[in-house]
Amino acid sequence: MSSIPLLPALIVEFFGSAAAILLSFYAVRYSLALVRLQPNNFIWGFLFYFCSTMAAFALSRGVGHIVRITLVYTDHNDLWKQLSPFSGGFNTLLIVSVAAVTIYYHKGLAAYKAIRSEARKLAEANTKLAASAKQLQTLNTHLEEIVEERTRNLSESEKKFRNFFENSKDIVYFCDKNGQITNINSSGKLLLGFENNPNVINFHELFNDKEALQSYLDGLAEKGFVSDLEMECTGRNGTTRHILLTANALYDKDRSLIGCEGIGKDMTRIKNMTEQLINHEKMASVGQMAAGVAHEINTPLGIILGYTQLMMDDFDENSETHSSLQIMERQIQACRRIVADLLKFSRQTESTKAAIDLNDIVLNVLSVTEHSLNIQNITVNRQLAPDLPRVTGDAEKLQQVMINLFNNAQQAMESGGEIVIFTAAEKNLVRLTVQDSGTGIDSTIKNKIFDPFFTTKDVGKGTGLGLSVTYGIIKEHNGRIEVESPVLDRGSQRELQGSAFHIWLPVTPETAESQKEQD
Image 1: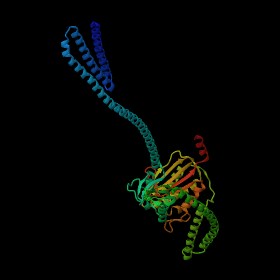
Image 2: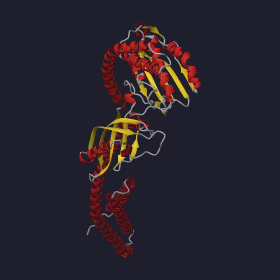
Image 3: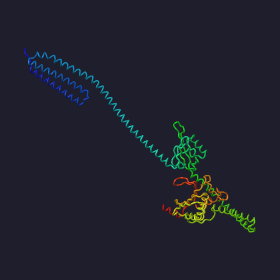
Image 4: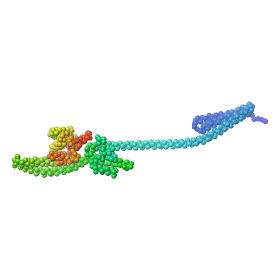
């Protein structure tokens, strides 16, 4: 029986086993590189373990074949028969290991896929969460911008309100439901006399007229507001003012009244101007009537006085009849003086006007009257402006005005005091002020002091025509006269005791034109 040569088969077997071993180890090396590149990749891990098992199997099988070929070729078949079971068993174990690794990684792959799926879902959720977070951040940024803008607008609104509250020349106040003032601006404190008194009183106590107070309370309770309510109030400093009130009720969330807010406009000056206008019209009517009465009475008085003086010549000077006629003469002369004052008041006498300096008028009158004022412990404080513009006027009549004002001040300071005389230029006017530190003028009679025959003096001490004549002379000079009592100190804003008469006279046309050109 012929045999096939074993050498070529052995050579192929040897080199094939060696090639399998080399290729398997190369696969292990390549899979290890993949694992190192991506350590968390489940597939690369499986591939590495699979290649390692196959490399071990290739090594075991290849070595076994090489040993078998070597032993057979060297006639050691008996030794191979002894080693063959061990080689086959070891190979079987490696094949089982391959199967085990495959089964293990198959199960692991399912878990890996589940984990990847969950990871993918988690990644998607994270993506959505990131998008939501970004959107939330955008909304948050937008909300912050809105809040910042609202805060800025609120701050500007509060600033505007605060500026209005602090700088308003009207009274701005807030009260609780009982009328207690919770907040009031500086002008309100000044007008109501609270600037130096921290204890603010109840607003309701300021009303002098209880009917006006009731209208105020009824309006807030029934309508929720009060509009243009006139009230007269007396502040802490004793000053009486006329206020035009507008107020709104304040409610809580249950629509229960919790207080009010209001604005009060000081109408005192307008009220006084209205009263002065009415008084001016009344004075004009009285002046016309006084002129007629003076002319009608003056002639009979002259006749009566003439006959009285003739009759006095017919009786002895020591007789009772002569004494009675003397009394008649004195009383008739007094009547004639009253008639003369009436004529001055009615401005019916002729007037000689020229450009004059009011400072000269003041100084001329003081040269005559200051001595008698000093005897009564009255000092004169001159505050005369230098280079005072000239006015057009009758010097004699303006001197009469000064005498009347000095007499009025002197009678108001029986125990002594101070008279302040002030002159100043104001645009196209010259202002003259005569201020005393006397008892002042009661507010109830302030609008009557320029009325003819009105006097607060005892009987026989005055005719009540001094200020009326003064008023008439000033009106004749196209000026105006006002009385202030008590007197407001322009510097400290305090009210001083006494009275002040303010006179404004227009400057001469030449001076007015010169000032206009300079402007």
